View (tube, rainbow, N blue to C red):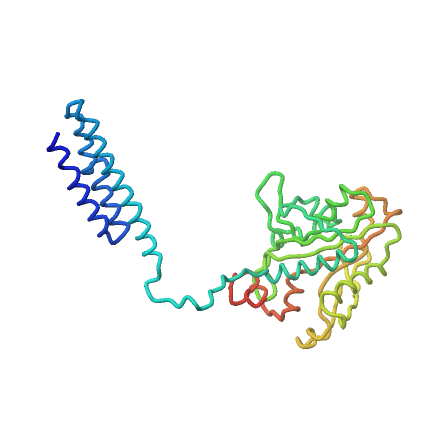
Length: 335
């Protein structure tokens, strides 16, 4: 018994001394394993208790447990000291200096323009609608009075998905207008911002993925005058009160009559152009109303659509559409 107990105190003192000299958390972990681990020195003494007489075991066990508790407390204190030491800077720091602010994220320029467009139309009572980017031929073409031989339906212009039945990546957000009219009786007043896809080779003015916003207004007695007034109000809100708008006759399969919209302001003149094409529009074709179950004798309406990238490029003076998709922080931090 005496020889067994005499081993405890020297072992404890040696461990305490080593703990105090440990200069890193890694060294401290090695010491913990050396003394308190499954094969540690103090653990080995605990395993020898069974060799003592029953009368001697309680006292010997009490002393070993006291030593173990002392070592555990010493390990905990030294760990806190080393963690604090390792967290301190290696070089002197002037703590009176102002702190460094974390960089804050910014809205993407396309997001900024989209929110402004939505805000302008909400002022006029328009709701925002959304729909799937993977569409079928009916919603993207057939219901919009697009002929089966129209070039837009060729694989050279549209991304098709290898499914049965055949699906495609929508080429415009007009497909959402069909879905809205299918589920909602007139009157209808919605805008549809969203991403669309076309088989274009990327260059300064084209990208296979881009964003559009389309509008639809259906009610009794809607006229081209309503269309012109709405478009002028929105573009002057977006591009400035000095913006001028003109309408040119055009052809779209889902509107009749159809127009292209040009606008002019100081930006277009700096670009060396008096007028710049920016959108297409027209009165909804009666066949489209029949396709969705509206009576064209009772209801009239107009629709329009334009590219959000085009608005952003004009507003911010951006000459290459690809900059929007390159995730270059030097570009994005300007907005």
